[in-house]
Every structure is written in structure tokens, then in C-alpha cells.
Image 1 (cartoon, rainbow, N blue to C red):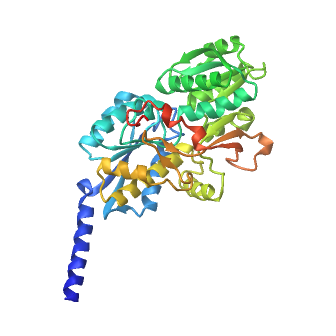
Image 2: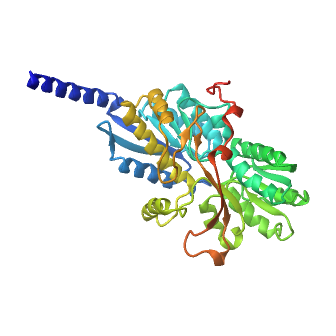
Image 3: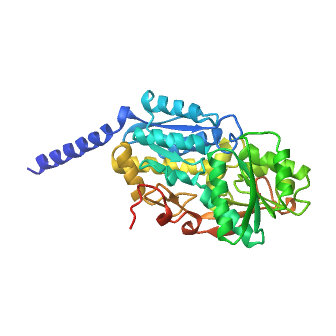
Length: 404
């Protein structure tokens, strides 16, 4: 009787495992990293994000529920139509289960709608617009690393408190720039500062002279750079040529990555105050992960986007394991239930609107003489608790948020 019972129990367990494995669609968990592989955001995301996703899959063991994990990637060229076509091909034909990264908010907003309609998970690390967890939120979309609200209230709030109470915005003319200008303007006004004007420039422009002259003529104490990547680098370099900082105005790099600082050099970038959700040299855990990444990425330090891709992919795979399926709705539910714990996030929580709640850091770029070696670029001014870094849930425009 005992033997029969043991046999039956073992058979049931084996069947249970078989059923769990059978819950993986197409016998593979396929994750597509979609980003800028060759343009102005390639250093921020690009192959670094692909590497981060592969590292997450390898660290997870290379399989989940007995099925192989596969990482594919594509270049959206910062164009919503190109990104949308790749996403539809991936989801409809190539059977991709989740899309990760996707810098360029206009592209990310398009992908958010596609993944929502097709019931697939979207792990957003590179895009910034806070609308992704606002009016454009999705039950299967997760905004992982940072957003325009965090940047606005970190850098913008700090500079107003330090006396920078009049602002002029130099804004990239698409969804990301508009959202960053909007959120920073709100933060400036809330801190009793004022916005005296703005000018918008095309994405990936090479000549900022006319825009910078307007900013200079505004006499604003702070020129807020509501742009990113190559646009931020070029606008800062050209501002130096015009003597804008020497003339008494300050530049606020509202979205500056460590790779931007590297391109600018400490002599040019020194003193910039930035807000990030990750810095490779924060503690032993961040250093250990980053040194492994750097060894595989030509010695280049990871950006917060790279770290966020790893974190998101690892959490997604853990949720599949815990849910016993890769069905997007069940995985998304499990992702919200589980705390996020890894080298970049401690006890992070995922809200109803898909916002990952984690601390952010207000950082200042070091002077050349303060740096002790390669990529030693930041000093930490303060830690911004998650509740202060991101928009309060009661202010969310997300339809998924239950209003009390």
C-alpha cells in the first residue's frame, strides 16, 4: 500500500512538472531587446542592453520551467514605425514572449500599445516618459529604471533649492522631450521657481547654435537640457563654445548618463548635477556586477539602462518560474506580487500602474582631480527615497489604478 502510494505521489509530481513545462508557449522563452543599435542612444542602450539581457538569462541558468531562454535583438532606429514593425514581426511570427529596453519614448509608447493588445510583457528600461505609467499604462507593461518625473524632481528640484529659480528649456522635439520639459516645469513651479521660455530642437541635430542663443538671451539662471544621448553631449559642448556657463548661466542636464560624461570628459562635465537610479561604484554588489559587465563590454561601464534591463529580465524569468507559465497576464500578476531584489534594487515594489518603486540618487560629476581612475565620475549628493522619486500613485492617470 505504501509503495503504491509513493508511486502514485511520484507519478503525480512528475505529471505536475510536465504540466508546468508544457505551460511554456512554443517550448522556448524568447525575449526581444529592441533599441537603438547605431544612433545617438547606442552607447546608452545598444549592445550593452543585449549583453545585460544575456547575462540575466545565463545567471538564471539558461532555462526556465525546463525550457530554453533565448535573447534576440533589433534596431528600431528611433522611429516608431520601424519599432512597431519589428515588434509585430516578433510577436506574430517569431513568437517573442516579452520585449525589453526600448529607449525613445515615442517608440516605447507605440510598443506599449502593441504588447497590451497582443497580451505580451513589456519591460521598459530605456524610455523615460512618465506617461508610460500614466495615461498610456498597460497591465503587462513595466517601467523599470527611471522616468521623467524622477529626473524632474531630482535634478530640477535640487537646482531650484540651490538658487536656480528661473529656467529656460532646450527640448528635444518628441514625446520624451515634451514629457521631461512638462514634468520639470511642474517641479520648478512647485518649488517656487519660474519657467521663462523654451525652444524645441529636432532629434539628433548637429547644430545647436540658434537654440543656445535663444537660451542665452533669455537670461534664465538655468538652461534645462530636456534631451539625451548625443543631443545632450553636443548641446553641452556647443554651450561651452558660446561661453554660456562662463557668462553666469548654468546648464541642467536633465538626463545624463555615465557614457555621456565619458564622452564629454570631466573637464567639460565637472559640476553637472544628475539624477540616476544606478551607479556602478555605489557598493560592493554594484561593483561586482559592473566589473563582470565591463569585462564583457570592452571595459565600458554600464549605464542605468543596462542595469535595468538585467534587473527586469531576471525578475521576469523568476515570475515565469513562480507562475508555472509564460502567459503574460499570469506572469505580470506574479511580477507585481514579488519584491524586486538584486544588485541595483532592494525591496523594490511594482505598483498597479507598472511603476517599479526604487530609490534614486542625486549625483554630481567630479572634478578631474577628484577622480581616482577610469569611470570614477560621480559623487553621491543624496539618496532620494522611492516615495519621493516617483509620482504618487494617487496622482496617477493610469486607468488600472483603483481610485479611493
